[in-house]
Image (cartoon, rainbow, N blue to C red):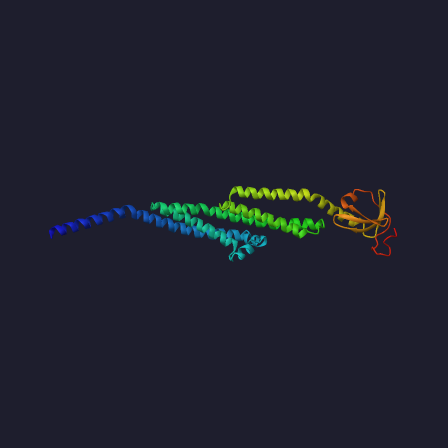
Length: 285
């Protein structure tokens, strides 16, 4: 009986000794980890709200609404203000950093490594969102600029050109955001950028003559109208129509088609004031 009592006493001593050692070494770490979490939570709440208020005061929500970011978020089921979302992003960035420090204090390495990966990934998410927001802003601005410029030039497809410029910028911004999130290979991004650049060059080179012809047609319409009789070089006739690319002239009972770019280079003499084109006077020049 005495032997059992002695063994039980020794077991209790060992248990309390181990508990005392654990308390003296691990309890301060637990207290420090809890203090880090508390301070991290307070700092994240304060800084998150501060960021939201500063962005709202700077007009970030208004700018986001004008550039279409709010509409884009609402389509994804997110109905909170962009300034609030940015504040929450800052909140979670600080909280994950505090959790990483707390687990590092407790020497819990697997959790620390996981949280470090999350903390390193959050700035990538924020940068991707910023790139996407800038892309939406630039696309909206470029669409208005291209559309207005095309309308000033009186191009018939001004709206289509504006939409083309807008979605080209959105595509590039989306690809850059995906590349930041490591969801897209840099090689794919470079390939897409190369294809867009080549397409743009083809449009500029191939469409230069078309644009020149359209601008020439605008110039001709300001000076002449269907029904006018004109003379240039060895040709004399009546203007039937001024199209986007060509001008149709009736000369010696034959329809002659002259490119607008070539016609604007000629010295043209108008022999009659503009009149509506009718079958009655068509051949009276």
